[in-house]
Image: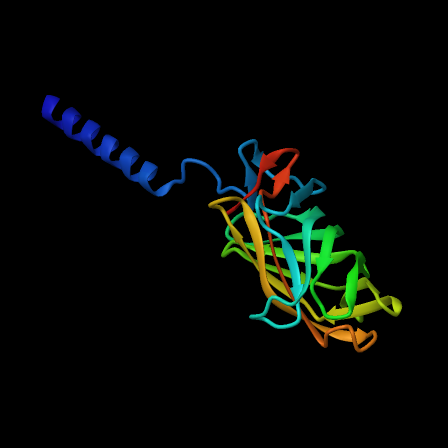
Length: 212
């Protein structure tokens, strides 16, 4: 009888261990999290340029002629943050540039750079892919106002979408040589603009955001 009870106890222990092995300790977290937990829908994410970097709009993907800005930042409101793996979405409501210079022949300086047609939809997948898309029927558009020997000129650039990469190593989002095409402007406006920038860290109420 003692042996039977011992065998029954052993069987019960094995069954309990087996159940524990196949049952997760806790539910999976969301795609976007911070040290404080999952990022909530409605939270506003912010980021500025990574320290020591600039945002550039060059006339070619490999060149260094064009516009360079020492300051840039964005704000985006989280609209969906599902359980990982998945894709979170945000509404990009602000994207600013400042302290900009130009090294284009005939251009004396940069008056302003304005991102038009906001807001844009931004999706962030668990793989780290970041995609920025405009509203249906619209385009991503940026207006660059330059000071020239002939006065002020407006250079308008458009793109159907932008693709970037998120990294948890420094909680960053990087855009590399994303192509814009000139839609209007004088001959001093280069025909194509290639946008490169790294934003880090991306934060939610001061806490760094991680992509899962």
